[in-house]
Amino acid sequence: MPVNAARLVSKLSMREPSEPVAVVLRPCEERALAELVKLRQASLDKVYPIVFDCPGACPQDELDRIAAGPDGLEGAAAVMLAAAHEPEAPGPILRAGCSICTSFTPGSLADIALELFGHPEWIGVGLSDRLESTLDLDQLGLEPKADDEERPSTVEALTRVRARSLEKALDEMAAARDAGIEGLLDVISGCIRCGNCQRACPICFCRRCTFEMPHFEHEPDHYLRLAGRRGASRLPEDVLLFHLTRLAHVALSCSACGACEAVCPQEIPLARLFAHVARYVRRPFDYEPGRSLDDELPLATFEQEELEPR
Image (cartoon, rainbow, N blue to C red; front, side):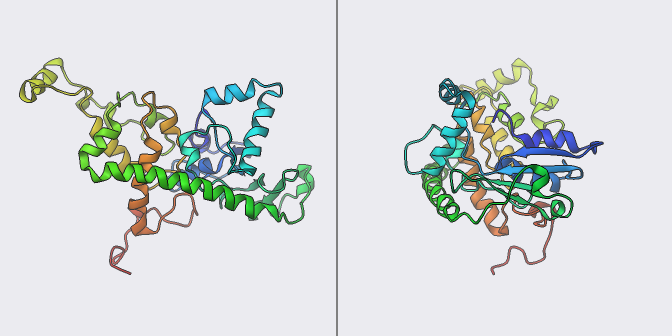
């Protein structure tokens, strides 16, 4: 997963393509695309998402190690899927975001849903309402399968494993939260403001980021004056503001793809930090990103009594 494909679909669909286009997405990419559609940064006109059960993504070095086997990348895919069918057994190393993901099956945006979990020899195929009237499985060279009794138990078992990892990660972030701003600074202390996280994030879509504007470009004497007042000055100095701004902009619509943490050269636990903050900012609105296109964005709507006790 070198890039969150929702970013690419956004570029593809901002101007309607001349022909219908099918796009293959992981569930986190599907959720990101749904949020981008609401933010008017993508369109589903002539775009048909194909979404599959996702066993997770490996860091590149781990994927290279598995793919170096005799079966190559196909063997790596088989290893990943086998691990998802046996979630309690040791499996490949997953990217941090994937290890805590509990929403790894196709959602409401999928025009074609590929169910890989369940019976290891079957693939379930589902079609959306907008495709059922114009397409059948025969045209795709596929056959509908009988009900898979193993799928619910496989999905439930994998969800339990991921949920335990998520709770552990959130507990770690809660300890930082209890320490206030200093706790957050400890989490992000290694940040070098390279900008990788914002460029990898599908929800960071601003054409020009405020942190790339001239008012964040200072002369050397500016830093020397700060150091003179404080005795020392941290560089880069805007690290805290950068991450707080990212959290404010993205936390509600974050699809938990983990791309930010995967590209961080300092291995800052960004996926876990965003998961922790998202839990709190979404709760008052009962909002879940990517759940449905009918769910309005909380910050783009207003209800007179939305924050009163229910």
